[in-house]
Length: 190
Image (cartoon, rainbow, N blue to C red):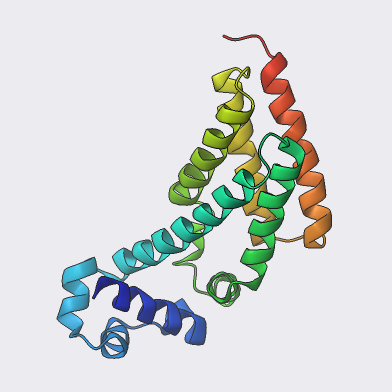
């Protein structure tokens, strides 16, 4: 039932933007009562958080797979993960709806990608840090954590405000990732 409600909220957000999402409309589309939606999520903000959580979990799973597909080749893994993230975000109708509705006045979902993006940053950074810890084991843990967090923040910024084509951005950011990971191995601990 919870998944059906989140599916309905996602579909309505894509169709009408977050401003057009109403708890009653989500309930009807999910085949449940409005009260059930409120009981499950508490509020529209709770529904937004659940929607963001599911999208982040899906993205992070795909990023883990892209990283793991390249083993110890840090540059290739970084490029694949960054390129996949940028391309998937550009093609994701929910991300498009969030960014488009934010430009039109609604910003209730945009903070999950930007200012209230703890979920995106924490999950994505953890995935990258876990991978880097296996493939750059000699790195200083604090420097590696900073590198992972920085890379994720830069990728998110390019999702929100793309500047160059995906391949070009992925190439430049993966080069920077290699540099940051290398710096984490040469930086003195403490």
